Length: 150
Image (cartoon, rainbow, N blue to C red):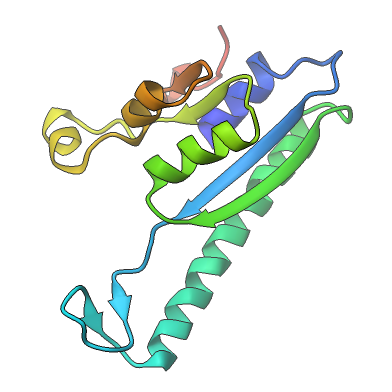
């Protein structure tokens, strides 16, 4: 949300008819309804509940982001929503290419060196693999500098 707020304040042009794509990527499930050795065994009811919860979370986040766009943005800015499932690194790169993005603005979790080494960095992967410029917005550590200004 901080990256979106920063983007609305600093990137989105008030005089142009830009299109802002909000992309939410749900991680692929590691759960399966049949035991195949690649995941955990759960009933189809549990899988449906997990899937519904995942959809609810995605919708909640997207609604919050759309509300922020309405409050801070200009009426001329068109907002489109894309919700996909999969590895966030691959999905973000693919979608950026498919929509022919002018710039990819993304947040950073702010992981330390060890966490990045173990988990990998989505933003680093995207910066290395997408064709458009990538702007990684880091959330300030102190709340007093959270204004998002230049």
